[in-house]
Image (cartoon, rainbow, N blue to C red; front, side):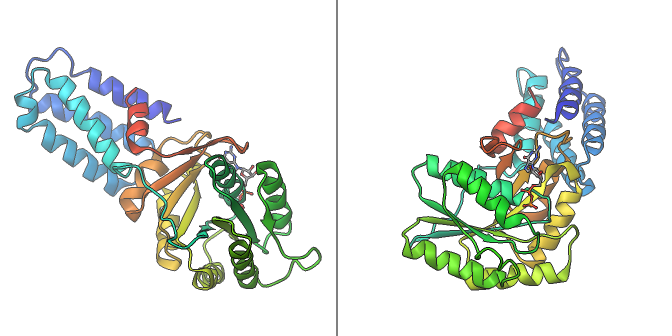
Length: 298
Ligand code: GDP
């Protein structure tokens, strides 16, 4: 994950070592190398511009000129700014005052929503919660079945439309799912929704209708990290079309260069809450900006 970016940023920072004081030329050379590394990692241009601008300003400022070890101080600045660009503090889910907490998943088809639903449910169950999954993706023929399989693997009940009734109304399924979860006293209900291969108005409308019917406490936008900075563009469309409270980066185990993770928060101002790192239910982690920045600078 982020190997190339990580190697290049660390190499350019190593170039500063051994300099007693840093000249503007030293700093600019390093910033240029970092800028190139970020652009090659497919980070969105405005994000790269802001990031390098802030690092340069701080690296030429007092905190570095007064530091005993200026090179180390610049490493710290790059670390801080990476944490910032990845969202700052670790993001949290919002919990309903009166359970169940309703979590709606949105995103393009193939983004990893159904898989994520299973991972999230399994993780929440391990934390002592009693989640229920709701199969409101009636677009893809196999989606309901797939959710039932992940639910079974996670040991979590799935609310689904009756077999043979696959062309039902996803809004009704979502509503019935949430009221069933409430009736059965589940404290969390995760609603899987339909995606399309590309952004389309009908999909956005359906997601809005489900949102308005179930009033989610959290709407998580699930996005394939392998699409790089395009993730930020798709996220903007979902932010404007449906709105969401947090991001889940899926397929971070693929050859993601880091572009999605580093672009999306800057562009959407929404935190990345979770990362999905494989096809198995256990391949899932909370997203911690500081740990991720640490990995990049390892
Ligand atoms: P949905 O259409 O958004 O519900 O997407 P799915 O959950 O069906 O996932 C689409 C494909 O991506 C499936 O083949 C999943 O096994 C795979 N997938 C989902 N999450 C990950 C992940 O984190 N890493 C990898 N490598 N594959 C994933």
